[in-house]
Image (tube, rainbow, N blue to C red; front, side, top):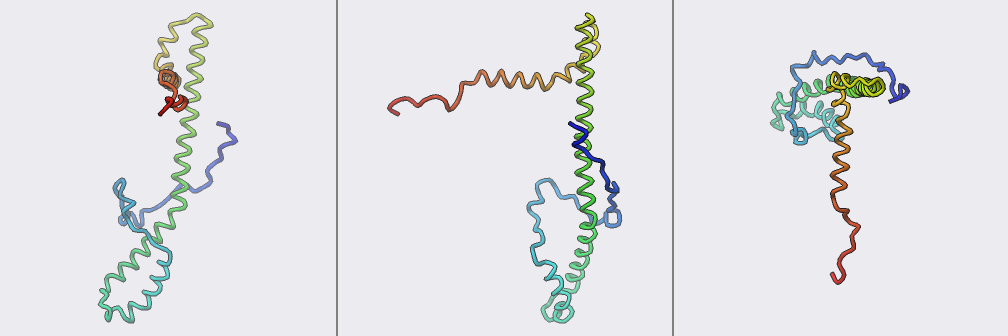
Length: 168
C-alpha cells in the first residue's frame, strides 16, 4: 500500500459516554433487527405530545410517568447521538489503522523471509532455513493455500461447457 493512500487522523480520539454509561445497553448478537427504530415524524409527535399531554393526558387516561419516560429517552438519545459521529469515525479509523499496521507487519515479515531464503541460497547456509523455519512457514501460508486451491480446481471437471446428450 502506498503512503499516499493514507492520511493522518485529525479527530480528537476521545469519545466520552461516561455521563450516560449507566443507560447504555449491549444488545445480543442478531437481536438488533427485532428492535423498532424511530420513524419519520417522531420529533413532530413528541412536540405534539408536549402540548396534548398537559391539557388532555388525564382525560385520555395517559399515565404521567409515560410522558416523563418519553422525555428521559429523548434526552438519552440526544446524548448518544451527540457522541456518534466521533465514535463512528474513531471506530472506522481504528479498523483502518489495524489493517494498515497489519499490512506493514506482513510486508516486513515477508521481507525477512525473502532475505533468509536469498542468503541461504546465495551463501550456501541451509542452517538459516531451519533457524527461521516458523517465519518461512508463516510467510508461505497463503501461497500454499493458493496452490492447494489451484490443484483442487484442476481436478474438477469443467462445468457448463459440455454439450447435452443428443435426443435429450
